[in-house]
Length: 474
Image 1 (cartoon, rainbow, N blue to C red):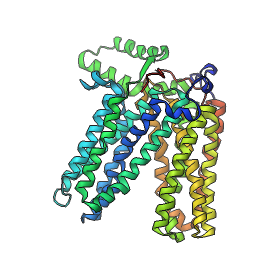
Image 2: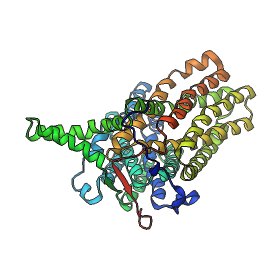
Image 3: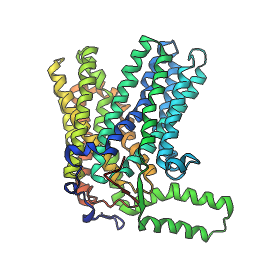
Image 4: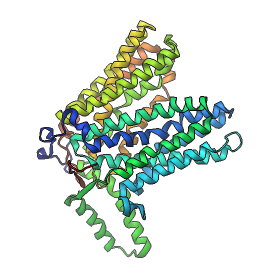
């Protein structure tokens, strides 16, 4: 099954013990710390064009039909792979020369989000709903573009064994931003009004802007394999009759769109590449399918809104962040492979605690136990899986390949999530969570197959490898 193009290298496996930034010290690395602030910047716009946005519209009397249509602005995050090649290959004029390609795109995207949020703040949706939609789309597009640029920076800025720690601090900042953009914005709206709330959120985008200005552009080198592949593009164009703009456009399309996908399949070989993509698509299905019905389940069982907020939201967030931090430490010490298999197994197993809770009834200790188990393993899984996705990319095409992986990671679960309400109504809560746990079985099998055919800690990541200076990196 191992394709001829799949490359592994025992010499390139993670060697965390040779790095002073191991264990908890990995979180003291400047670039790891910076990811918390970039994660905050990435997470802040999500609810402001999603759940908080729809709450605002309903609060001021906008019709439900219009609210439903406006929810489509969030689709930008699901289709970001369409313009990821531009973020990957296009150097912005002026900003690109001053900041570098990754930081210039991050700064532009953050400014776009802030402009969109401020525009929304200054418009009355009951009088100018169309303009609200325009600025919401602007904020959503900027947010999705920022995600692409930050993901690319995260992969390129640190070595493999720090990727889980980078992901953990990113998740921490992201979740803090969701609290601010959710509960924080609602409190500001109640205290003042929605203009105050959205204006404050626009100002908070300065966290990302300032971080982008402080950090350094990651330094990378180009390996011979990537140079050879791109030289073949040049040789092909030399043999074509195309000249001028047509030739330059053809070269750009091949380099930006074709090469990232050709590189991935060439490195792994078709059978192994399909195995990897199937694993990426199935890894989070169990969690996503279960998560869609979580709050309706709590309410049906008899828990109060306050109990759900305190345990499922606040305590659950603490457990998720703890799990992400633990995942980051363990990957820096043990590598990705053992943690990837462990979290693939634990994620569906913890779903069964909700079946137990369904038989127990609205007992607060049962809710605490189920939330602790599910969110702790979920946080670990997020950190480990993001590190794994980073290891799959050729850092010559980071933005495009990572956008593909991150979209594939959520789309199957989101699609199946649409049927969870019908399933729960027909089979009941106990069997529903057993079925959602069973949905994780393919990911366990695929994780074991990866150890044989595409070992996560032996994948050679070609292209541009990070060049780090621990004394000055930031």
